[in-house]
Structures are given as C-alpha cells and as structure tokens.
Figure 1: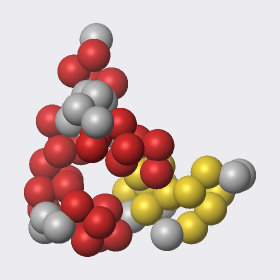
Figure 2: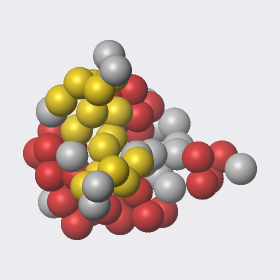
Figure 3: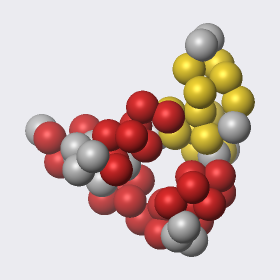
Length: 65
C-alpha cells in the first residue's frame, strides 16, 4: 500500500490479500471491468475507493458504459 497525491493505492497482490483471493483472480476482475485500476510502470495501482466500490457491488468503468 502506498499513497499517491493523497490517494491510497494497492498493487494487485495486496488487493488479492485484502479480498482473500489469488492475484490471478484480481487480474481477472480488472480485465472483466469488475474492478477498476490503472497500470503504472507495469504494476497495477488499485485505489482504496475502487476496492470499496467493488465490495459494495459497484462495477468498474467497462461494465457501466
């Protein structure tokens, strides 16, 4: 976990640990648009807010369009 410009972000591995799933599952969620994140320097950056939205049943950008 790190903070970038006041936003707490997690890697795919850290997100997997939080959600008690594998990193591969998190990458699947990202690919399907169920979870939103940004790839920065080859690593995923998933904001705390995006994780909360996922847990509350809100879908990522790809499925909202």
